[in-house]
Length: 110
Length: 133
Length: 336
Image (cartoon, rainbow over all chains, first blue to last red; front, top):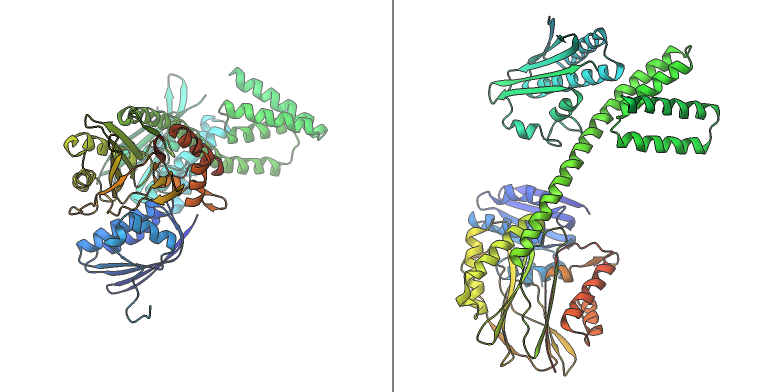
């Protein structure tokens, strides 16, 4: 059970690459890193979850928290690279309807 | 009855001086080897706390005699930031200086008596006594 | 101190024996000695000091470098003794905390207790098991005078005490909204307001609410982001997922919920669950939806309560008796 988080910050654009599992043990680390960033003004955060093979509801809680923070500061949050299992988690909880999930990148051929 | 000697704590070397002083006095008073080591460790912890958190202070060692019962008193005084929540600082596992077992509750367990007075912004005074068994 | 003296004598004995002949039986005595001294809170540094003292007695002309080396070892082991004592004290505190939590869990149990209604033509079974001491899952049945049974199943995101505290609040919120109990979508809208206003922003709740009319055998329901359950068609012998879209409670004040309806025929079943059921993990991976349905299929002939109990036992077993999340399963079975 391990997590690795890589961050690339460029002014308001924040790219986050997560590797590993997001569960009750690793979610606090993710929260500690992303929460302060999500409270900045008008950030554009992209979180790449391609290399996340497992996420439980604790992880979901972290993303909802970040989403709320970013929305309050008129920023944008995009999650990408979600596996079918992860996507299902966002769909069941209704979050897929309000959050930007796995949307094709501009200019990309679908 | 009390003879007091003090060491000012400013550098890490002063911690060694405080240890040496404590061990000498403990030996003189006739403490066993294990208790000598305990007293020294307690002094070391208190001096280290001063060095790390308060940066400046002093550790004093006193010989005590209570109706023929000999003992050693450590007094650690600093004028550092003080401790906000003493109850929390006295909780096991709280110490942030790293390492299991470090910190004030450990010192308390090594000694027979332990007293702490601290006010935020003013400093901390810790007194601890060990009696000869 | 007679214990210390006895200990000294015993150690002297063991040491002399071992120096004379290095036998396994003596090492076994040493192991028993250490267990006894741990029980009596003898610290590592005391053992070193004892060892050194006895060695000096046995070999008065022991080289001084050996003596010095023991002094160094004693100093080092004192650090371990320091840590050991903290460990002892923390263990004691842990015991206290545990018993406190046990009491809290009992209180919670009483608070959230619900009785499974007994009505003609409908067989209901329910089970809810927390992963830790306190449960972040919740289910509730209320039977009213209009031949309706209200069924709620909810899951707080997170486990343990925070989730349990939150769940107690949800229960009281529900109790205070009796007039809405007949309209799942309105009930969820009202609860959403309450959760949004009162619960920590990092906490979320998923809930499925349904009303079963046991006269018309009509099931109306709505879901707030809850793990979908299943309908079982008794005639076709088929399971279908209950699709009911809706956002989790506590995220957006303005959320509206869609209400759905379904006629339940004799032999049909409604299966409701928490994500602890589908998030079960084994060494080989997740318990897939199909596995769960195979289990249900296997026990179809049993009573609803018997089915949920057996499924819990099976899932517990394939997870090596370690639940990762709270587990709740409800089955409503219309009699043939």
